[in-house]
Image 1 (cartoon, one colour):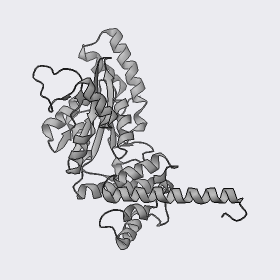
Image 2 (cartoon, one colour; image 1 turned 30 degrees about the vertical axis):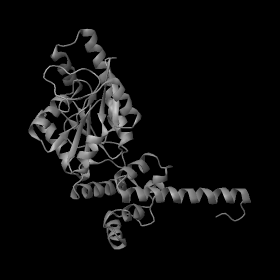
Image 3 (cartoon, rainbow, N blue to C red; image 1 turned 90 degrees about the horizontal axis):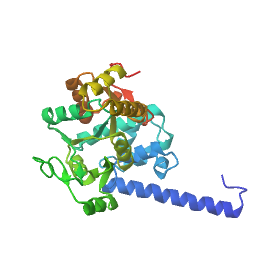
Image 4 (cartoon, rainbow, N blue to C red; image 1 turned 90 degrees about the vertical axis):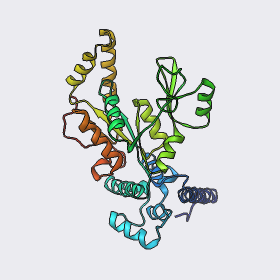
Amino acid sequence: MTRGMPEVDRQAASKAAVAARRARAAIKDDIRAGRRSPRDVAATAWRDTSSPEAGVRVPELLGALQGMGPVRTAEVLEQLSISPVKRLGGLGPQQRRRLDDWLARRDLARGRGRLVVLAGPTAVGKGTVSAYIREQHPDVLLSVSATTRAPRPGEVDGVHYYFVDDEEFDRMIADGELLEWAVVHNQSRYGTPRPPVQRALDEGRSVLLEIDLQGARQVRKAMPEALLVFLLPPSWEELVRRLIGRGTESPEEQSRRLETARIELAAQDEFDVLVVNDEVRRAAQEVVDLALVPSDSARPAGRAGPSATTTGAGPN
């Protein structure tokens, strides 16, 4: 490969190869030590095929997992129809899906929960679906947000929100303790603390985050292994009816929110799974199933696009 190359180029190539090997070794060490999950490494590789993660061979990834010796690794590769010379960044869409599903099932079997992010356009009913899950499915933990606003009557710290002052919120941002955060209504700040979520996942509990589109994008960067679910209305006309039927906004505000909804709906292809909220109980059950039971149809081909798991008609 390097025959005939100028000496300076040969040395540069050699240094680059050494740096790449060291980067891959560090990634494997992080997996063995539990500092990174294999799904996080795979998701990073598929999001950026020029990253060090993309250069990790699939047998190396599997071999870094506890209890995965050469024989078991070869069996899994055959099961997934993946060549032992394949690198993560070189996997095809179907191979990515099969590998991610295998890793997800392994996580659940070993008592590790799944992080599910629920987002969608305004008035689609995210809060209603989340409230139903909170009441009917205590096995799925709904994340508690941190906020800089003062508690309202009846609100309990650590139950409804973590109430913190601006100084503490600044510290949480600086220390990387927030999966996502935003300023709401140009006043108070809200964010999702990472430690409680990570602790619950490590304890084997699945966690649901109900957040907006921008927050979902931030979570994807912070925890690429999270499953992003986009809640859809049965139709655009139904979304309009729900928003206007609330009667809580002026006509000008309704028009603004509908325009926002159009923009938000255009982002649905960024999500892993689409769920149509045509009936709260059914939609909630589908989200719970995604949180607790990995399925072949619930994952995209390397996050290249969503896999709709319902048959309801989405908005036009």
